[in-house]
Amino acid sequence: MQITVEAKLAAPVETVWAAWTTPADICQWNAASDDWHTPRAEVDLRVGGRFCSRMEARDGSMGFDFAGTYTRIEPLRLIESEFGGRQLRVEFIAQDGGVLVRETFDAEETHSIEQQREGWQAILDRFVRHVESKPA
Image (cartoon, rainbow, N blue to C red; front, side, top):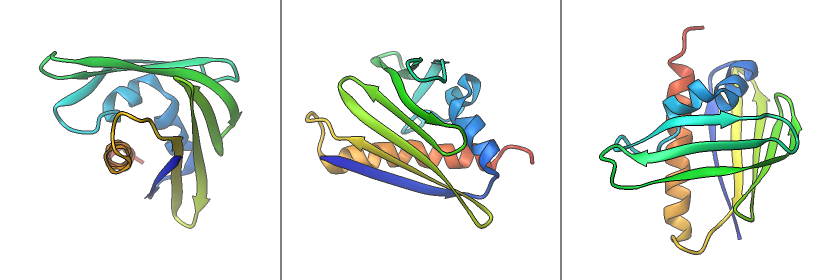
């Protein structure tokens, strides 16, 4: 089963793409809640290149690496990747006055579909706030 989350941003596609693919930016927005953070991120943005974001609870009680390999890249339009045997597709769709970011990913079996959707949407919502708070 696949899950899709999406959000519209009032920003140029170049700004949105850069914030999605730049490690320093990823560390600013990649968390589902304020009690989590991403202390480091790595991006090798090319087909066959790897990515890794270290996600940790701020209290140090737990953490994990969200890591995988890029399988398809169309600059400013699409990023596809594989992580832990699952597939992720991120679309950057230019629209009037902004960009729609749509993430479609394979569900996992540990958490409910709704929990997964809510968690991924929360991260995407933080991404929107991060991008829209950047100086123009």
